[in-house]
Amino acid sequence: MKKIIICIFSAALLISCSDLEENPVGILAPKSFFKSPSDVQAAVNGSFAYMASEKYWGRKLTVSLLLRGDMADIGDQTTSIARVEVNKFTMTDESAMVASFWPQSYAIIGAANQAIDGAKRVTGKEAEINAIAAQAYFARAFAYYNLVRLFGAIPYIDFAVSNVNDVNTLSKTPENEVYNKIISDLQYAKQWLPNKQKVKSLPTKGTAAAYLASVYLTLGDFQNAYTESKYVIDNETTFGLGLEADFQDLFRSTKTATLKEPLFTIDFIGQSRVGDLGQDYLASLTGIRGDQSHSYGEGWSVAVPTLKVFNDWDARDYRRAVSFDTTAVRNGKVVDYTKFTSMSSLAVNRPHIAKYNRYAGVAGSNGRESDNNYFIMRYAEVLLIAAEALNEITPGSPEATGYVNRLLLRARNKGGKMSNFPVDVPAGLSQTDLRARILNERRLELAFEFGRWFDIKRLKLGSEVFSPTGNEPQPNFDPKRDYYFPLPGDELNRNPNLLPNNAGY
Image (tube, rainbow, N blue to C red):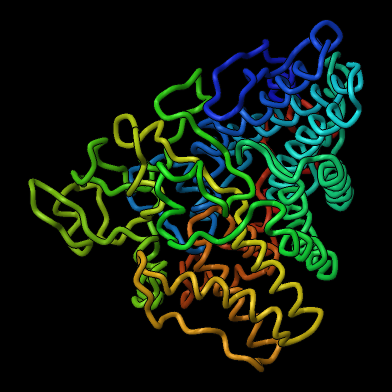
């Protein structure tokens, strides 16, 4: 457990965070630090700051999720072997990707636990203190939700650590128990969080309810998934939510702060960071190698869409144009994706992901440390959760169809000009046909937004999508092994109570 302890016992860390009013504080000495609600808020902000790091949402976790799915593949074949192993299902318990985002996950959890503990120590208005603590409960649930979906049974720490011996011999908590604890945290968050926050990087009641809906959907509890998503939909105005008129605006970094669609974002700072906090590489990793279109330089062609995903996506769908870059510029000339290798020997002749590199705003070299803030949950996903869950409860439900058609109506708005495609889902579909349509709309609407792997896992689609006729043929995929990542071997070596590793590793 040494790596976990390193994160939990980090020295107090102070940074300026773009959208949080308090300076976020990482790990503290709770008895001496927590004297007021603002001190608790500082610790909470530390938890959210840890999310906006290279080790977590800035590269390691997000690239792992992209490559593990069936819509993105390795472009530059000389890239890190650790990325190749994730993509080709050849990971071992020595994975460098896991070795980064595993301890960072526990740093997020550790800061949240300190804030929850601190909330019990301070005096003040109960509602104010509970509302701040609710942010920490959400942050803890968020980190554990990612961990349990990736690893299954994991060490579960829900207390502020003051002694290494309290955690260095922990055993794994069974997967179902972790989910129950996540649900409990989100229920507390839903109870005490406000309807709105000044920034989308802090959660609201709607955020907590949306995540409850997602957790219930993952568990196959369709009634509760529908109930929670419908709660968000019914309170759309109260929570200040809605769909943006233009799909492209979701991926313009200059507009992120004013959008109504996000329920929760991870906010990066744009060329301002401390250590790896605020460090974002997704524009670089998904940009086109050799491209001179942007002032911040070329990309690296690491996580690149599979050609089948692009070819199978109807060209009349505006979301396709928003999601892919199909041309680049070299020496003043426009280059089609079929000739990208003419720009660089490390390029690949495929369309590239456009959502993070096209409008990255102020950014460093190659798009590093961009202005991008990332939607971790947006209202479109809530509509899709409600549609999927309701169709399982009431097959072919017109209400479920209506939720999907809201997204299709938005997709017909091509930069202010309405088109006639994609057409609405027709009424009267069978449960099977509507299920397939909902899942496909989920795949397209949320393309490259880091959730596809979790859908493949929960629906056990791996043998289909990684087959020779699937979106991304991967002969190494083994359904008996690969729905879980390996727990890091160095943790297991230090703490045998975490053995055995997940099957096949």
